[in-house]
Every structure is written in C-alpha cells, then in structure tokens.
Image (cartoon, rainbow, N blue to C red):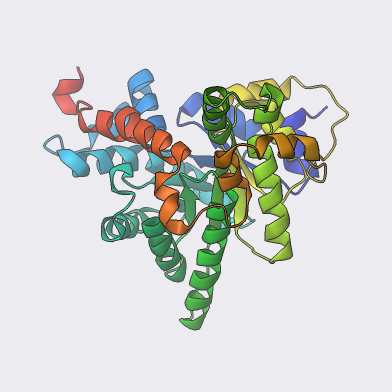
Length: 347
C-alpha cells in the first residue's frame, strides 16, 4: 500500500522535492517519491556540521587556503555537487521537475543585482541540473529574468506573498520569450512561497496588535495566499511552478494536494505525512473559508501578502518575513560556512 507521499507523487500531478542536505534523509525521501532537492546555506552548514563523516571525500579535494566567499562557494559546490551528480541520470531521462538540486546565492547581497548575476553565472557552469536560487527582491527579479533568458534553471526564494510570486512569474515569462528569440530552450522556473514562514510572521503581528484572527486563522494564512496565487497562475497561463516551502506541518501539503506545484518537504513533515491513513484525496480546489480571510484581512501585513497589488517590487525586500529569513540564511548559514574548518583544521 502506498503511503501519502508515494500517492502524491504517483497519482496526482503534484511533484515533491526533499528539503534537507543530509544523505540518509535524501535516500529515504527518494524512496518515498521525491524527485529533486532544495538546499540553502543553512542546510549546507547543517549537514557539514552534523554529519562530517559523510562529506570527507568531497571536502578532501578542496583547496584549504580558500577564504571568504570562495571558501563558502567551494563548500556549497561540494554538497550540491554530490547530489547533482547523483541525480544526473534521473535528470537526463527527462520529465518535469526530475533530477534537480538547488543552490542559493549569497543572502548578504539580496539587493545587489551585479553580484547575484556573477554568482548565478558560476553556479550555472557547475552542473546542468542545478537550480539557482535568487531572492524575490526587486534586484533579484532583474537577475531572475536574465538567468531565464540565458536558459538557466532558477527558483525565486525569500518569497512569501502573492505579489512576489506574480512578479516572479512575469519575470520568467519575459525571460523565456527572450530565450526563445535567441534560440535558447527555456529551462525550469520556480516561484517559491514560504507558507509557514509567512504564518510565523503574521502570528507575531496578530499577537502584537491583539487581532481578532485566531491561531486557526493564522495557520491558514500561507495556504490562503498560495491557493490564491495558484488560481491566478492558471488564469494567466503561467508555466512557472509554484513551490510551497518553509512548511510547518503536514496540513500545508495536504491542502495543496493535486496542484501543479513542486512542493518542498522537510524530513519532519515527511514523517508526519507517511503516518497518515488513506484513502487520500486532492484538496487544491478546497478554498479557505471566507470568514478566515476576513479576519486575517484585519491585519495590514496579511493584506500585503494576499492582495494582488499588496506590495510594490521596491517593498519586497522590506517585508517582515523577508528580513527575518534573510537574517537566518546569513547568520545561521552563509556566515558559519565562512568559518567552517578545512583540511587539518577539521581534525
């Protein structure tokens, strides 16, 4: 009998990717139907620190004199390269969303287009099945479109709102037309919506403002936003994939079952989902109750996230969830990699 994840992967159009850089967790996830993988600086640092024995071979060949950004890039390449090489046969067989692994650019440079493009060019030269993760900021969208135009596979992360994913899809549309005009085959494009991280932010806002929104309402905020975005993607005929990420429970995934999405699912939530008992059903067409939306809409920060024109591109980098998540990617991911010991220092 299939578990929930196997059912999702084999009997719906929903694709799911593993959200962790640990080798044992990746192998298990692929046994449950995952066909790709997401990483970020935090996850790369986490696996290197918690499972150093798994990475001895990859790290042994690194130049131990590397410092700064070059050192971080070498570590990211060592981890993502291991998976990219492993997934290459699956990628070469073809199939939408199959055989990819993500690598994220420097979160310290979310507003600097030239720096992000330079890193994107390097990432694109590593492996054909590597997806370049860029921030859904104004500068990031410029780079996103340029990468799409060059035929790179890209995902826009640090994204929590309907306005952001719509802007990403429009950037992808422009980039793909430019690619076609240049005789380049467009690659995979993804627009992330970090549903659980939006919920976390709105929970704090609701508590601070003594809102009428309940905890149950807050747990549905990210779901409401991505369901609205999904309908708009269909209406506007976007071929960019929405990716729910930063989920906080299995409910974030089950509510979207059956959607043409690529879900990023962490090991903890995978374990929760495989314990579910069938029969299973698609729920993407089930709407969040209007009364929930009305209570959430008393929060200005929810309106920014839910309304089509809730924010301008200039405001994306200042949104509360963006700042909180950038801080984690920098201080718990990228910056610790700067100090990660190489060579003899590791012993």
